[in-house]
Length: 164
Image 1 (cartoon, rainbow, N blue to C red):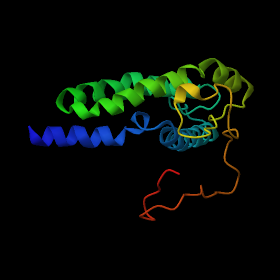
Image 2 (image 1 turned 90 degrees about the vertical axis):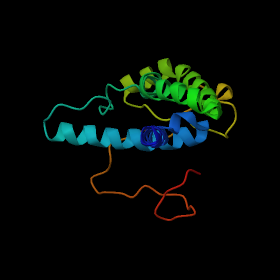
Image 3 (image 1 turned 90 degrees about the horizontal axis):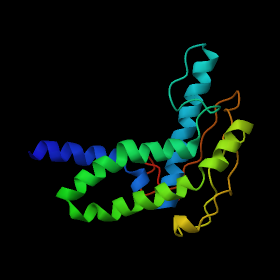
């Protein structure tokens, strides 16, 4: 039915970051995980149980991204590809991006236990398999006491942030 296919397509768009180029994916994954960790920090402050994947001290970002791909994104995109064969390009990105994170699991586990876990530095939109598994950006730290704005790169619509 048409409504079902449209709903599935909208949901696929909503969770599609892992199916995009590695630079776009990492750009948005970092923002999502920063938001998750800020929520976890707040839950700790309030003395309530920290939600799954929201605790910076126990969440390995690479494992979290692999789980998101394996459990949520890949199954949907695999089924969607049966109806829309051109989705194959996205499923190839999923495979490549999963390998990108898989090579970083051990390194990020070490960083996580030290409290220094950070997102990888991407030098370009080159093949994720060519990116260094240990290069990392600034640490994902708890937010400062004062709220801060995350800079948003200019895009065609100032209300909709665009990846760099």
